[in-house]
Length: 129
Image (tube, rainbow, N blue to C red):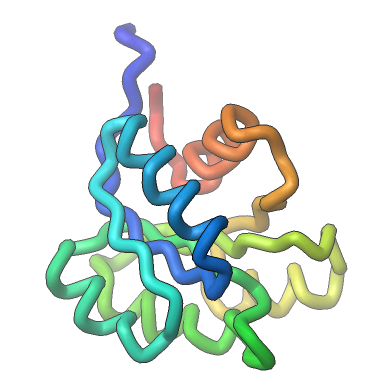
């Protein structure tokens, strides 16, 4: 095995420009195609343009609930495409259960070191190395 992961076409929805820029560049360097957006009104155009097959959604968007966008994102992407919830809040069981019910495949903390964050994302996406 080469240790190389399957290339994903990833949508990232996060309202923090610094986090969005960092994660976008980091995942691009790992060989993925990334559509990073700051606001949910760009979901449809980004998923369509980039043909996204995976998504990372921030749980909190400037006074908004990021989880409510999971069904829309899943409907736009291929069947079974993974959506991962991104949180800086730590793990709250109630929110995790709600995210899973809405179709998220997992929860990943923004506070992880970059390589651990990447490993958690790839694991949640279900890719094989």
